[in-house]
Length: 400
Ligand SMILES: Cc1ncc(COP(=O)(O)O)c(C=O)c1O
Image 1 (cartoon, protein in one colour):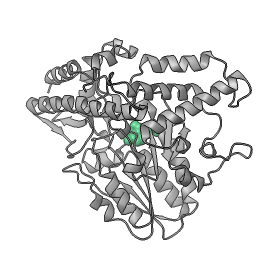
Image 2: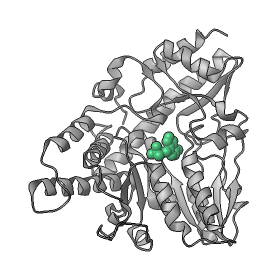
Image 3: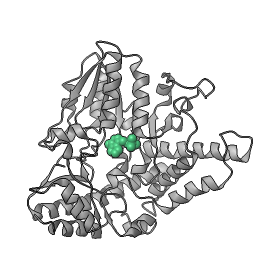
Image 4: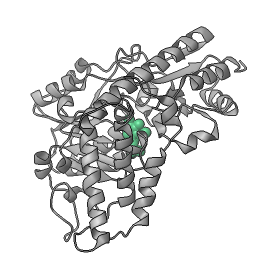
């Protein structure tokens, strides 16, 4: 079943600005039902969570509905869904909690492919605990991070492996279940950064083999917040810092302060929007989400192939997104023109494609691009063939 990009586009007010948008890996534009859900949450009585007053019940219901929606999206148990300000904040909090049990001789594995959000929190927590950091490399020629790359740095002292499910820089989708099997084989935990992956594929916490996983709804049509998913039984074993009077239940134990109820309402609406990308799909919300992502992958892959063809025919362009399995996120450079100047030229033609290393600084350096990085073109459910032709025409007109 195909995805109707025009129908999707008609429901996203920001697209009326007229730009062809390729900046979705940095954050997507927001559909009207998500905007409405946020406004509605704030328009009705709202209080701290409880069951006595209407305002309390509204807040409580919003949280329960959001946990249910994100659980459907991530293939998780609603009791294992934790909300936070961002994926970065959740990774920092988790790293500090886990590191309490690490000490000298223990080892933590991070990868050169990851966004810094899935590197630095672990590096700093390991340093504070006196543990050793081991780096899994990737192949800059192919863009692949293979299970063997991780295996090479595992040992019986490995306590945690942190790996991305998809690179926000070059789109590589490592074989996470294979990495999970290796990590678990030496008794380590696996933490997965699914921030980029969750925009393009149906996440399944158990199938990935992740002990913990983070994502960010603003990357998939929702508002700006972060989500952590884990098995509730695993969360029960952790003792994060928290206030004395705040709930010690799971998952509330991990949620510091008052939750942003209006954003949770928006996140729920974003999941419902995603579940309806294929209008005639049937079944549970999880079933419909899986159908939506299958249609989305087909839609985005077709557009990506057209971009790749176009870039190849322009000449003088090096594309760094080369892995066998990857998201529709293309990083490229143009011979003789700095990435920021390419991006500026495109912006002048109302084509939004930013340049940089996008916080994946280790990966950009390993690719030989330094912190300047490249130009990144990413797709979203609202991307369409006309956008792609505008991108290619604007690049064709680049003064070189
Ligand atoms: C792969 C990846 N991980 C982590 C992050 C950080 O997410 P957040 O902004 O929610 O902290 C990003 C944001 O760009 C990302 O692309």
